[in-house]
Length: 423
Image (cartoon, one colour):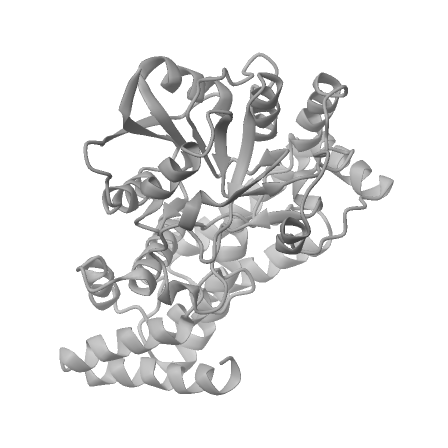
C-alpha cells in the first residue's frame, strides 16, 4: 500500500461536472512528499460496485470517494485529513456531514445532522482553514457526497446495487470492523455540494428496507456524546410519520408513471425550443408547474431550473436584453448552459485572485448573459451561494474594465436592488 498517495475517486455521468470537480482537486495544497491520483468512473451500475472497482485498482492508502458535484474549496483539505487520521489508528473513515444518531427508520437526513457541505453567510471570505489539533467527533454515519478512508473495507455491492444507502452502509461496515467513523469540527466549509438538496427518491424506500434488514442488530446511536458535540447539530424534526414512509413507497411504485409524464412535458419543451417559439416555451413551463402541482410529475433539480429559466425569459423579453435561451434547440443544451453558469458563478465567489475565475467572465461576456439571469441563479429558492452581492459586483466591475457600460449598468442595478432587499 502506498502511504504517500491520495486517490480521488469520482463516479460520474457528466463530463462537465467531473472536470470541474477535478479543477478544485488540482488547486489543493499537497503535503510534502505526497502525491495525488484521480480515478474517474463513468456510467457505473451502482456506486458501491464502482467504488470497489476503484479500490481494487488503486494501492493508495488514502482514498477520497466523492460525488461529481462536490467541490473541495478548502485548500488545506489534505493536511486536515492527515491530522485527523494521525489522532488514532482506530479512525478509518472521515465524512464532512453526518449524525451521531440514526433515526430508527434509517433516514439520516431526517435526523439531527452536523458538519458542513455548504457555506453560511460570508463563509466564502474565509476558506483555507488549517484544522487545529485535528479536532473531530465520532459519528454513526456520514453523507456520501465525500468520504475519505485510510483502510479498505469493501462496499456492499451485493445488496446495494443502486445509488442509495451505500454510504450509511459503508459507515456501518467500518464500525463492524472495529474502526471509528468521524466528522471534523469545521469553522468554515471545506467543500460545497452543489446538488445536495435534490434526491432521486424512486428507489430510496427499496434500499431503506434492505438497509434496515441488514443492520437491524447494529447500533444506530453512539453510547455517549459531549454537550459541545450536541450544540453542533442543527435542529431537525427526527420524527417521520407513517404517512411519509408510505409516500416514499408510493413514489417507488409509481416510478414509471412519473417518468413517462416527465418525458411528455420535456418533449413539449423541446418542440418549442426547436421552433424558437419563446412564448410556447413559457406556456409549456406553466403546464409543467401544473402537472407538478397535480402530483403527476416529481419535481427534480433539472425541472426546477427549466422553470427558473422560463421566469427570467419573460423578464429578458420585457427589458429588451439578450435571451438566455437564444440559440438553444433542446432542453439538454439549456440545462448544460445553466450548469456551466452555476459553476462559473461559484468560481467567481471562491476566486482568490489566482485566475480561477478568468473563464467565468469570458463565458458571461461571450454569451451576453443578462444580470437578470445571474440574479435568478443566485437568489433562487435553492441557491447555495453565500456572498451573492460580491459576485454581482465583481461581474459589474469586469464590464466596467472592458468598457461595456450597458452590461455594467445591468449588473450594478442588480447590486443596488439586492443590496437593499437581501443584504
